[in-house]
Length: 120
Image (cartoon, rainbow, N blue to C red; front, side):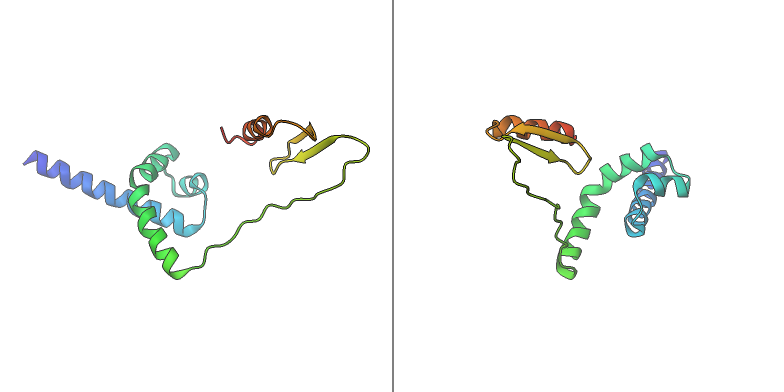
């Protein structure tokens, strides 16, 4: 009997967190802002988003794909001719400036950009 009550409580808890994640996503707020505004522990919100995210996101993505066109994201790029130098300057979206020789190794440059942008 106690086992049944515990399972019901777990199901209610799971449903409550699923509702919170849904409300958070619908609000357009970040998890941090939503947790703060609603008096929730950020760690718990992250955990439940991870636990529930696969099913919630998968269902929502199917609905989105059927009802809304996907927005394209573009990165602004400006190309300038090198002055009298053989160097290229790259300014990343996070504000890092990377200067490399024109004939720099592409793999090494890619790894540097991944590191400064926090992608690895």
